[in-house]
Image (tube, rainbow, N blue to C red; front, side, top):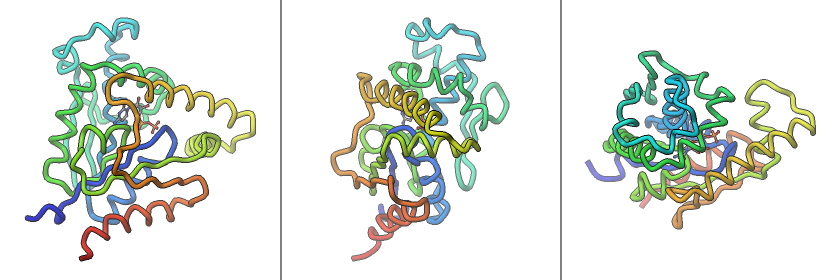
Length: 228
Ligand code: CDP
């Protein structure tokens, strides 16, 4: 099978830029599998919170400690199922307490090492749309199409709130903007795999695009691979 028969597509970008929803729909349209790497970081965070390890002690966790956490990832047709301590998790991964602690977990070398291998195995056969912070830069540096999604901070905050069913006021948007800006700061300033635009990525600013338009832009980049 040639390389282009099963491409790897990466979507990176800051919090609330629409990576996961876009990646999921792009994967569906192309018949590829969606890998939401943020969900893996969230699952490790949830496992540690459930275990009761105080966040101040996470920095001392070893590779063995991380590998021993009760996380399981298995592939299915359209995506990957994540289990924590034997139960399938989804909504729990976006709880306020997981969201509060995930950037800390993601700054730890032992956590990143543990997930790097898992993500690369998930992508080894291609036919994958992976979204996160370091998909095009570290996890899949040879990806066939790399996209970097950006959007205005307030627009990202507004979308985040609307996603959770809120009709946000200006005050809500201001508050959420601060939370998102802080997570962006932590993700961009950490030493290991910081949030960076890959040098050969296609940058798409989604501030004034609707969902369908941003999905179509990415799908078009992948379809262009098949044109001589
Ligand atoms: O909330 P949002 O959808 O933007 O984030 P997410 O994709 O669920 O990722 C949650 C957190 O995991 C991020 O803020 C990063 O700290 C971390 N992460 C990472 O470090 N590397 C990735 N490839 C994906 C996520």
